[in-house]
Each structure stands twice: as structure tokens, then as C-alpha cells.
Image (cartoon, rainbow, N blue to C red; front, side, top):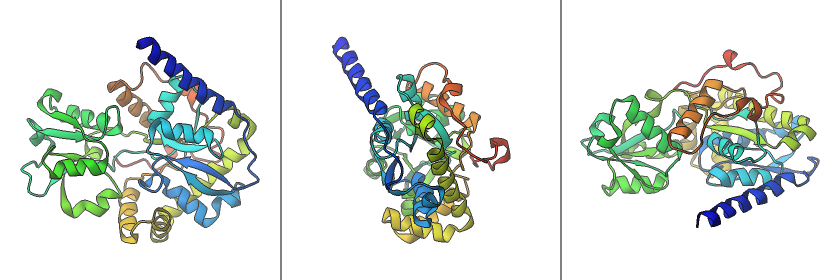
Length: 335
């Protein structure tokens, strides 16, 4: 059985490697890129703005659509297989791919905080703080997920032995809230825009921003081949996204309306959600925060998703950030 599983892993790696080696189409025609959880979570807001305002075309690339998935390795495969081989993925997926020997380069930071994530309980629950969860059940989405990492780190930071709280895998955010309502857990994770929509139905137990260090959540990735052959395209993509971030901060109401339209979301929910995220400096304009990157890597080691040190000098490629200021000069995520 072990040999069979190993062979299957090798076959999957070989298949993905063949995708990475495939020739890349030119960017003269309209193209698509990939963004994890597009249309559901707010990682993609800068891309929605950049498409609507024409920033991609101004920069010399024509992006007319976004491919998406529920995250993880699926998004990585979408990045490499569909449209231009560039996209925004979870940092965990990029690191895991690199450690599996897949040719991936991280070319910009995306979401630079996990501070939007919180755990909630029902309005009538006796649970008020994270300390009250001792002897009770705490939900997280799935093993080795970001909520798995953050729930462990939050308990550790609060001085609560992990064996005093029963952590339960509950699936997605929606199924977790259902489990909470039915008494299957006493606290479940939530984040914007779901929090903006559901906040009147639940009460916060703890916010991640109060308990964990800064952590980079998503990054822009490509392949070595594409980076070497199409540096101007990457610069254009990153510059257009950066203009999208800057527009969000300068014109929050209009940006929220754009995202509401792109995501088929209620405008009031989009506006409140984006306001919440602006206050956290949620979207990086591109520069890398080495501390935030390493903090996420440490969390991934904690849950066994990766092993050993991350070869950041080989994985990060800063050549395409243009006039992007160094991390020391940028506003830092409030977490």
C-alpha cells in the first residue's frame, strides 16, 4: 500500500511537472489568471478593481477573467494550467509545492495578515473568552488548514493546554456555523465577508489578531520559465494589482461597489467587509514581509504540513516589484 501511494504521488508530481513545462501563450489576446477563493473571500478584491478600472490593459496585459478553486493544491494546478501561469494562492500551497520539487516562484505578497479571522459562538452561549473553551469543543475547518494552525497557536498563546480543549474538524465555514448552532462545537471560525453578513447572529469569542504574530496569508506565484521569458508581463500584472490595492484605500465606497458586482454580493455587505479589512491593512501592495512569511512557515511546521526550513532565497523573486518600497517603508498589517 505504501509503495502504491508513493507511486501515485510521483505520478501526480510528474503530471504537474509536464503542465509547468508546457509552452506559454503570449499575452496579446485576453487571458485569465487564478485567484484562490475568487468570488467568495476577499483575496481577489484588488483584481476585481484592476479589471473594472482598466489597470491591467493600461499596464500592457489584457485580463478578462479569473479562474478559482477552494484553495490549496487545486489553486496551484489552476495557476500552472490555465491562462497565464500567474495567480494568487495560499502561502502554504506555494511552500508545499516547492518542497515537493515543483517549479514555483513567489513574485509578490498578497494578503499580509490573518487578522480578519475570529472564532464565534451563539448569542446565548456561556462561552465568553477563549479560556471558557476548556472542557468544550473548538471547531476548525480541516486538518493542516490555516484555522487548524491558528486555533493551536491561539490556545498556546493563551496558556491553555491543548488537551484541555477538544478541537474538531468541521469542514467549511458554513458547515462550522451549522455545527455551532446544533451544539456540535462551542466555537467556530468565521471571516469576512461572512462575518459582515452574520455578525448579528453570533458573538466573538476571540480574534486571531489579538493572539498570533503577523502572518502572510497569500502570495503571487509563477514558474521559473515564465519569469525568465516574460518579466515585463509579471511586472505589469503586479503593478496593476498594486493600483487596485491603492484604489481600494483611496476610494473605498466605489471599490466596494466594484467588488459587490464582481462577486454578486450585496453592496452593503461588500462595503462593511472591505471597511473591516482596510483597517487591518489586509492587502499588501506586493513587497515581502520576511517575518510574516516565516511565521506562517512555523505554523505549517506545527501541523506537519511542511518539514525543515524554507529556502526563501530560492523561492522568493523580487525582480518584478518595480518601484515597490521595501517592507520597512510600507504600512504594516495591523494584527
